[in-house]
Image (cartoon, rainbow, N blue to C red; front, side, top):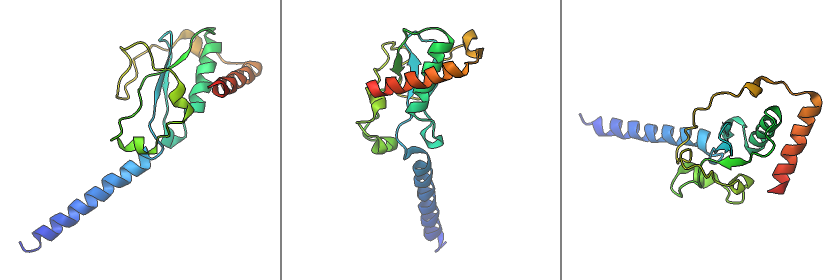
Length: 148
């Protein structure tokens, strides 16, 4: 019984260390954001610790616009800025261009969590881009990012 407090203290210490380690592994890249098209038929999200960043999202959005022939849709954010007390917000930069994307006007989809609306894959999603269209997608994505 005399070592009980020591054992409990050591267990608590290691559990806290484990929690900090997990947070550092997954949340030190900043806040993952989810995005939706203005027509509500396309969604995607960042996974920063895997390298799926804002530039990737813009590329896939521009690809969607070309595949589905919807040039007038715009990219919208599904999450407002992180709360100051969240761990990932410590690693956010307010100057990141991803925060310049307008918040979605569709309040049904705007959440503080990370749930994406269930959207059926579009039939045009099966369409494969030609090399010329891929080059156009890259160009459009680059132009969009530079315009922010």
